[in-house]
Image (tube, rainbow, N blue to C red; front, side):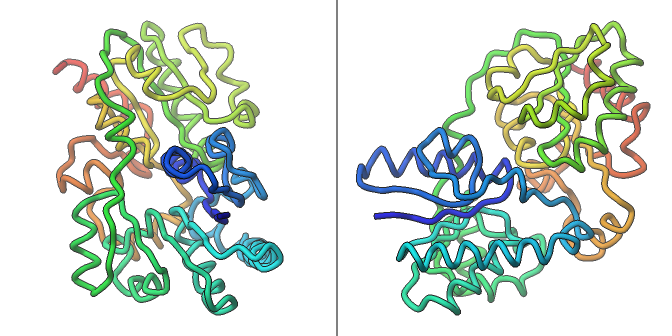
Length: 324
């Protein structure tokens, strides 16, 4: 049996890699091919398209890449038809995968579609639920999402969250500060100047900057001169947090991992003004990081847009460290 897979970001690739590993441990005659990244490739996924070309941050870039992504959707559709693939797994990446879901169901009558980590409709608005009815199977990573979908007469299965299985019991003995600029090019470019100012201001502190890929090295030439900074590429977070006392992290799935590690953290985020204003209008949430959303409480301070400045971050860092 062969599955076509579709994801578009580093976090989705990570979740997909765990899913593939779990399936392959039980069924030996299953193959996976499609759109994924390095982590899924290591688990045996045949890469048709690498996710490095697909990552999108914000509404404006989504508009710019609309034609490109539409073309890709039809290319993937044709591949599925040509190879007579009957099963598709969509992982996260709602801006693309929801439209891809509609396209597949319109074009291939008997296709079976599994949506793993569907869009957080409880954030974006419940109108999106109707489109998700097209999926044959919905698999979620938070148990309370099952009840949410049940309320809308949609069956959803709680798959579990791989992070709770893979990221536990890390002893923290180090004194370094972990900087996580995100996985998307725009996120990295937005946060690195802020991180550089912090590194320069706090010369007596030791920092670790974690990047996801060697491709990101092009953005950090200015940082290589700092002797109090260690740069790490594509290393598992659980192998780093033991050396750290605090993290400053760009909002994303990584914040959930940090919460599971019980590493004190500050969540930061910067985007263009138009993206921020559109997001503020559309999103129906009070928080942006997953731990705060799940618990409906600010367990991690969130510094967004104009609040995401070096001096402000340093003030919060000092407050946290004084209470450790």
